[in-house]
Image (cartoon, rainbow over all chains, first blue to last red; front, side, top):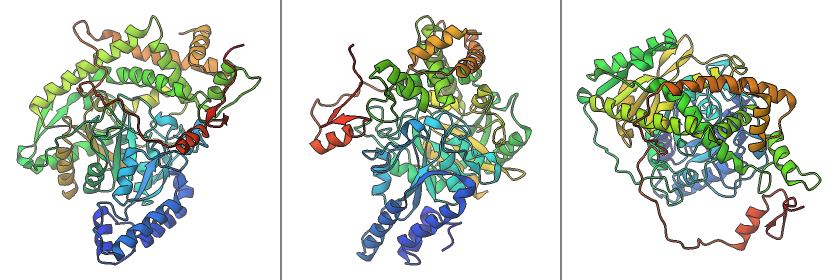
Length: 471
Length: 96
């Protein structure tokens, strides 16, 4: 079996025509992981037993002539912030290095039910805090296109594992670009769904008002299939939403693509800009209309995002107190010392930095100046997008201002690392669906095109993405 | 530039034991990032309401009914704790 070209569709076809068994698929991809991991480091843990067990179940279904579910036999990797019952779940942190998930996240229950083979838990920046996976305490993920460069983050392992053909699809989680950025850096498709489209139950929280789980895939069609498997209202996540998705395909002739000048300003690498403009030109030649739009408050988005992110993170990570689970240090029966040491010794520098920033932003005297101010910027940004969507169906721009950078290049400068997120954070602040599509390359390095749509309009993103794929 | 004492105060509020070299590093890092945040001051938000949540939701309520669970589940959860005893968590003394 040629694993390089496998998609959800081709695996289904191969299984139905009995060209290969699910067990053969599982073994082929597990071999691929063994072969490539010494270079890529996309996985914190390979779940071989689970994948083989699931593959045998699929083969049993086939032998009984049962209907195959949507993702039957599809090797899938899961970001290590998403719980898979009975497997270790570290979130890239020493704090959770021995933590065994006691239950499945809702998205995991859904992909299990859909017949996917879970091949492993992927490497990530600690608790999702980073843009390069260099903040993982399990080593950096290397970019499959150039091993001296980062794969992007925080879901770097989920993106790299798909790009390196260690799996066919994967799940990541995006708080401020953590799916779209690594998708762009690794040259794969990555979708951040509308806030509330996908359940967050069983997902280790970073910033709860921003976090969304979404798929990585080699093709738009595969990303779409996985999205429809994982989405939906979940009684266990009160912020998940009953969705009325439009399925009707729109004529490309009627599609209006808005280009915000704020996404093509200072700081944008010229090679990235060239590839993005070329991709937009292809959509235009297929009949889409390009219109100019404005997002006047976009310049405040990154600062507002990091205030909200660190504030929510400082509250969310208070649960790691060394009392109920995770790393714990206890000496002399001293409660305060136990809190200080358990957190001080097991959390990494970026996690501490963000907890400190959030604690500061929420503390008496600064709350209005930082936190409330950032929430007001969110409102202004939402109004900007609403206005832009009066003129356009999709808003388009680059995913990242720069090409995948060298490992170590930005680790000494936290603010430079934050600036990589400049084009991705607005969609999280406003809750909009956004997709990263391979737009071309600069040398051997991939460039991503970002398309953003109105809430629950993922379908128009898939449609435009498929058109671009065919061009 | 925020002071060393401020960094120590925030670290205590956040329950983080910092090494001396971490305190110096965070003093520099946090000051730089807070400087960047000051761009927010220039936005006119005098007529703007804050938004905590991007997608409009009404109160999400459910019936106040216990979910089914077994005593094994309780033991499983308790056994994840660094120290536990018969399904209870053991923690350092709260009172002196």
